Length: 392
Image (cartoon, rainbow, N blue to C red; front, side):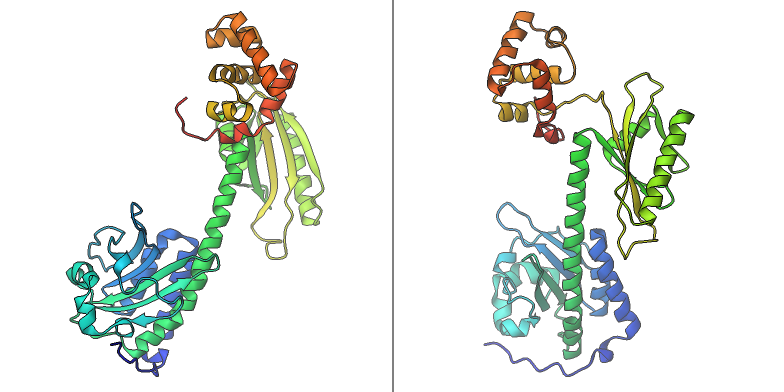
């Protein structure tokens, strides 16, 4: 029989002062921006509620999935971050966004009789429970749990009211967390794609200083072969190139301040190594009303290595062009600028064998010339899979 719950008539001020409540909210929103801060946030909540555990069930798990539970325990060791018995918990699949306590779900005697309590909660000193399943905009559900040992009082009406006041903030923080990490994942994918296409991306702020670089750009700058970082600014090795590069950056910054971002300028940058010059494009980034005039991305510089070698995954190239492994290996060598004879030597095959492979490649790809083959190969999506870890 479910116990009746007395209405929460106490006020938040009975339980917590403004400064402590504000501190908790600050930690909640810090966690929204940085996943590593959730434990610190939960520790603050655990302390405020005098709980032995404060937990956020990110993923309940099941089967081979161990799930993910972030918990704060005041320094008491937590046995793993998953709960294999969570599926049989009386607190699983609660009505979303509704705060409940153990007394709302079942009687004390029934609670003691559950397998979940006997096998999981009692050995860990968990008796009193306050729980809420929090829904987010993308349809996810996160379990928020506060617990106390039997030796302490059950959660009071004032504490329940405080938890109800915190839950909307937790929901907003979880929505923000999902949005931020979605944007970061998408940004990472864009950066990966640009790197695989051998395009370096360098972002400058409104003072011309480097804010960030993708992996390809970092590799180019580490080479110190025509382009380098000096005083957190991008410089060219040769003075003539350096003056032109700085002029293009200044022009882009002027365009950005004026709200005109149509200006796109290009130049080549000579390399002391004697290799083909870097191709450089400079473009202003459009500001918005919230960031205009503040420390923000203002100019983007794209750097292309005309001599960059393509090393796409053989499996993807085979799938895309329906080539054999041997034909794919030859196509990659040709795409990297080798002649048919040089490719045959690099692959340690006879010239006649290479010619036979090339005829088969022409037939399968529908091209008639080696230059066409190189063009379609380098313009294909195969290079986007170059980050794969596969045994070739």
